[in-house]
Length: 489
Image (cartoon, rainbow, N blue to C red; front, side, top):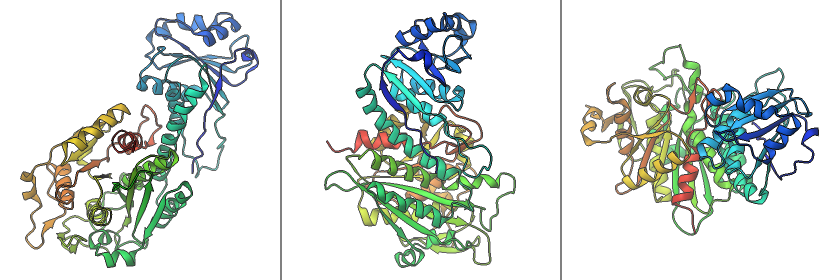
C-alpha cells in the first residue's frame, strides 16, 4: 500500500533559507504582492521572484498555478516555485495551489513558505493528494518523494487543521490503492484481509463467508459470484465513536473484476473493470478516515465482495434468484450484477443495524457517464434532507455530484413475466431504472441515497487533485457529511 507523506508543520524561520536544498515555495498575490518569506527569497535571488511575477507568464496564470525558477542564483535550492494565490484563498484555490506544487516539485524535499497565508493545511492536502503515484507493480525506479515542510507563523493552529485533513488523505489514498490494484492481486480474499487489518485503528471488522451468506438467504449476491473460484464475502466495519444511537450505514459494491459473466463484455476496455469495486473502495476509505480522526459518530460500513466470471457454474440470463428480502429476480443480463450485490447487503444492513439512514455507492451504470460525464456522480434519493445534506458536503469538498430523478413511472420497465422483477429495464433511463431496482430493497421510511460513481471513481486523465486512474472520489464528501450531520456534540 502507498505510504502517505505526512507534511511537517514548523514555525517560520527565515534565517537559514539560503542553505536550504530541494525546492522552496513562495506565494505572490494575483496583484503581485509578496509576503515576508517571498520577499526574503526575492532578496536572496537578487529580485528573481519579482522578475517571475513581472513576467507575462504570471499574469496569464490562474490562481493556484505555479511557475518554476530553476537553479535560482543566490540559494542552495534547486528550484524556487512561485505560486499565484490570494492571502485568503478559498478551499478549492488552496488545494489547487498544493496540487500545482506537487506537479512541479520533483522528488527532492520541498519547503513551503506559508507565513500568515490562510488555509495552508489545505495547500498541504492538495500537495499530498496530487503527489500520489501507484507503483507497487513497477520494477524500475520507485524512489519516494522527498519530505514536505510547511513553514507558517501559527504552527499549532495549522497543524491541528492538517491532522484532520491528513486523516482524509489517508482514506483517499487507501481507496485509490484498492481501486488501482489489478484483480489478480486484489481478490475477494485479499480485499477482506486488507479491511480486517484496519482493526488496528479501532474498527470492529467481521468477514461473512459464503456459508453464512447462504444461511442468511443472500441468493442475489451469491448468484453473481457463482462463476468464479474466488469466494463471495460481505465485510462489516463498525466505528462506534458516538453515543448509544443507531449507526449511519454506508454500503459499497465490491466487484473485484467484472467480465459481465455470461453476458460477456466486449474485450476492448475490459481491463478497466478492475475498478468495479470502487464503491466498496470508497466505503473502506471513509471508514479508515473516521477511525483515524476518532469521529464522534456511529457508522457502519458494509461491502459485498464478489467476482463476476463466466463458467459452467455461472448464473445464466433467464435464471431466477431469490434475495435475502425474499423477492425473486429474473436475471436478464448478468452484466447488471452490482444491483444484485447491493440488494442483499442493503437488506442485511437494515435488518441487523436498524440504521438512521443509508447511503450506497457503486460503479453501477455506463448510462450515468453518458448523462453526467466524468465530472459528477449521479445522486438518487428518497429523502430530500439527506440528499441536500450530502450535496452540500460534496460542494464544500469540490466533489461533483448531481441529483437525478426517481419515479414509480420507471418501475414498469422492471416487470417480469416469471418473477417479482427483472434486474434490468432496457437502455433508456438505465441509471434511473437501476436506482429504482435498488430502492425496492430499502424499507419504508428509511432515508436512503444511491450514488452511481461509474464516471468519477477512475478516470483516464488527471483531475485537480489526482493523477490518471483512481480518484478516491467521495471519501472527503462523505467524511464531511458525517462530521456535519451525525457527529455527536
